[in-house]
Length: 580
Ligand code: PEP
Ligand code: MG
Image 1 (spheres, rainbow, N blue to C red):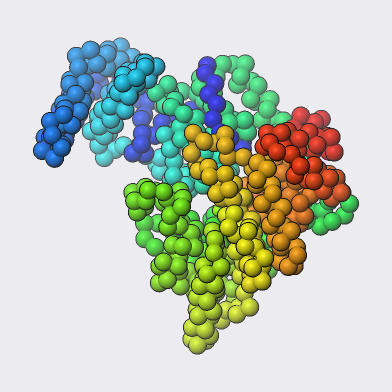
Image 2 (cartoon, helix red, strand yellow):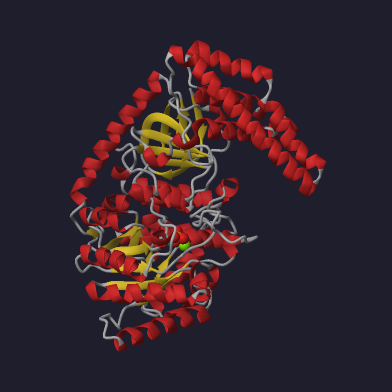
């Protein structure tokens, strides 16, 4: 058994069999071949080795021509490794003695080599990638067209991968992918957000570990604690079964809150809305009693297909959400595409993408694309309480230009006698320090604001939200973040501008802080709604305010977080994770 620690990205526990995705996204199968098939397997292997070797020679020649011999030599070394007699002897032994298929024997052997190299110092460790390259190349030739990819699953698995983009995560099969873990990734990344939306337990940022696992092995993903447990022993499995039972009971305790509004212990109504990425999530919002959709991340419409969604595609999706919410407000956020959400193949090369062409900047740079979305939102506004929100607004000029474009599209629709709500409320996300500093001015012009803490933390602390190397610096309780939250709420209250929070700052202790700072509306993943309502019912606003005031006096993120957790346990012991 081996326990690895990563970043808890999406809550829940999953126990099952491993499926390792190579970076090309196909499965390394564990299949036993019939004993009589050994010769056939070895013949397939020989064929694949020849084909892979030809490919490497072609690479060597091309690279030598372009860059010189010393670079071409990298591929000569690959070819040598590919032909290594010791490697062949080991693979052959596994095929003959263990009856492994050629694919599985190759993968096992090369991963063992990679593991040994990885444990060594310096340049030898760097050769690990060469081994992965050889593995990939051999598997590609062995599997040919028949390779099993994650889209064609037939049985439940736990997916392990170096990385998953948000759109790859969105494509995971909801029933058959029980959980996943990745080597890369950080706490606030969109991969985590999508995993939570799909209610798939996930751990990201585990660091290099794929060399230590093979397809078919047993594994536990603990998305609460951020643990990945390889080959768990019997005692651990039993412990996790007990834990699953405890969580089932917790879910039963939350059941009565599904159909109740959120009200604090001293009788103040709190609005708890839902963040969604896909129209299908509306059902989860409704059954858990969401007060509305506080954030509809429309970029997933763009990520889900290889072509841009048409006005009609978008209109249908937005109308469907609005109608299914039966008159409750639905805040549609315009396209928030950026480097963290676009799979790298499609992204334009940018040296510093988080500070680059993303979100409202991208929409304003491409008015033809933006107007298509605005038309779709406005047309859908005739079918429910739709509101519109712009992401990552940093400057007043951006807000004003986007707002002007909305007015222009309204006029166009009216000229064509196409119904829309010309009074549609329009707001902005507060996600950067510049928006907070200028908020009094923004509040004179916007209908509402919503604080995006995921990005606000990133841009305040200058920490990439999806980079595991700096994940320890990305902290929602950082005193600088608390001050900005406080400034935002104060500015909004002074101008009577409705304010909510839609970032993933959703732990019960953070809800206590937000209520204490003066917020009366939050928007969270649909799965978190009942817990938020329960926390509200256990706390009085007075107590929340006292806790928030004390937290604002502190100057250390970890001290603040510990304080908030302790305070919550003191005020509402029944909420503690192990309470009876
Ligand atoms: C945020 O930044 O907090 C937010 C809600 O937007 P996203 O996570 O989609 O960037
Ligand atoms: Mg954001």
